Image 1 (cartoon, rainbow, N blue to C red):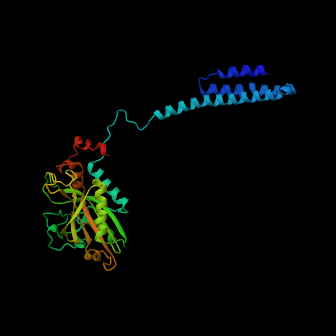
Image 2: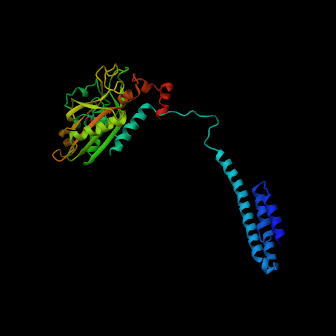
Image 3: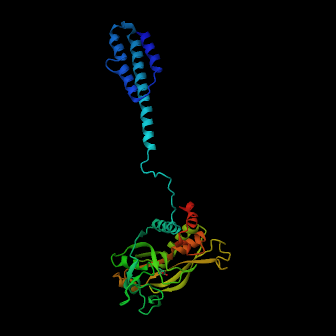
Length: 341
Ligand code: DAH
C-alpha cells in the first residue's frame, strides 16, 4: 500500500496538461469516485491495524497534493484566458489616435474653482445671452452708465436695447440672489463679451470667475482673508496682496487687488512695470441697492463680491503675452500645457 502511494506521488508530481480539458481528465483520473485515490481508500480496510495511522496520513497527504496540483493547473489556464480577453480592446481604433490636451484657460479655471471650493464656495452658472436688468440695472448701473453704450456691449435686440451678451459674470450674482436667501457662497465661471477691437491686449470675448458671499455680519476683513488665501494657493505661499480703492457700481466700498509680482518677487521688473505689483481682480462689499433689487434685506445681511479675468490669471501664471493665442487654437501653443494637464 505504501509503495502504491509513493508511486502515485511521483506520477502526479510529473503530470502536465495542455488544456483545460486535459486538467479535467486528470481530475477524473485521480479524484473522481472511480479514480485512483478512491481505489486506495477502498483498499484501506485491508491495511493491518498497526499501519492504519501511517497509511491514513500518507493517503491524506496524497489527496491534498493532487487537489492542489489540479487547482494550480486549472488556474494557469484560466489566467491565460483572461489575459487574452484583456488584450482584446473593442474600443481601440485601427490606427493610433492622438490625444488632445486641456486648454490653458480650462486648466486655470479648474484650479481657481478648486481653491474656492476648498474654502466652502459652490459653483453657479448663468446664461451668456442676458437682459439689461441682470447685467446692469439690478447691479446699480445708472441708466446713462457708459458700459451700456453700444461701443462696449453687444446688443441682440435694438429696440428696446434689452437683450444682450453679458459683459461680466456679475449677472450670475443677481440670478442666484433673486432665487436664494442667504447664506450664499458661490463662484461663477463663464464667458463674457465686449465690443472691443481684437489685439494682443483685448478681445471681444474672454472669461471671468465671479465670487459672492452673503450672510449676517460679513465684513471687508473676511473678503481680504479669502482673497489672500486664494492668492497664496494660486501663486505660492510667499505671495503678498494689496488692495487699492476703486469704483464699481455694484460694490461700496470697492477695491482692486494687486499681488506681488511673482517674476521679480516684488523688487520691480519690466513685467510689473517696475512697481513690484500686478493687478489681478476687482472686489468690494455688495452695495445695499443690489441686495434690495434681489429681495435680500440689507439691514440683516451684508456680503462681498469679487471678479477676476481667467485670461489675466493665466497670463500671470504662464506668461502668455498675446491674448489672441487663447482663441487661435494653434496646437503647438496648446501642447505647451501638456505637463500642467
Ligand atoms: N464685473 C467686474 C468687471 O467685469 C469685475 C468685478 C469687480 C466683479 C468687482 C465684482 C466686483 O464682483 O466686486 O470688470
